[in-house]
Image (cartoon, rainbow, N blue to C red; front, side, top):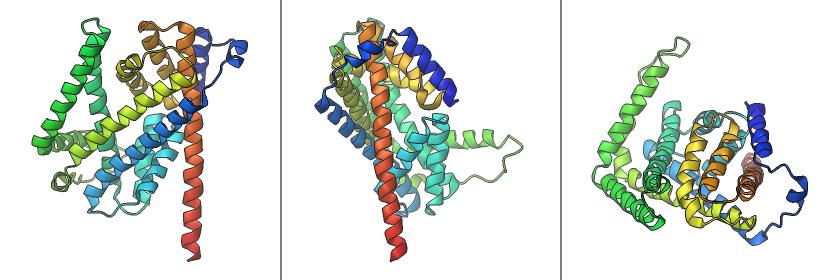
Length: 317
């Protein structure tokens, strides 16, 4: 799968016209927007870890690892997602890390990760619905922004008033998914526990995690805008905002590690459709892929070194 992703990425680079080595050498990177994009990545990672920890905390009455450990679990799983299928490493990898921390059972570890991802899907769906009229030519940018704000306020109110209904729907989805899995003869059949809906309701998990998901989406969009500025690509921030849901959709359906090749092709099409020159669009999508991979490696290195130091100190005590 990794080599297939590299193949798709190579085909995209070649077809997009980004194969001119001399042109790559002439690119002038702006350091301050690049630093800002790194900080936005750090903030988005911290928010994901905090959101995931809130969900896990409500399922175990507080018996969960620290926020930093959740950051480490996520970063390492995300890095492996560049080599192995991304959804496998994210769901199974994060669930395994949390399960072997000794605080949650396998079911609740997996449930916390799936709930965490469902909030990303919910936010992506809201922004997709709000941005679709713009891409179909029915709405202007300002109308789409108003629709985004309106829908998000409406969803927040619904979660405040009907939070229990939301989690009961999630429970039904979980039950259905696991029942389908247990149809396979090589999987051990067992009685499924239920998500602890009452504990989730006590801590207003739905509202907290939805607002954190919006904040995370904001940092993701900010990172893309700063990538464009760092690469001196002439692209409107509003185009990136309204294109982000479509870009996330391309990432969601991508079956290659890290969405390699497919994610780039999706963003390239979005930018070109938005009036960006092909050379500039190719520079943006290839540049952001390289920067994001480097950022992930840096975060994984620091989190691993800190975790190793913490382990050694604990053993010496």
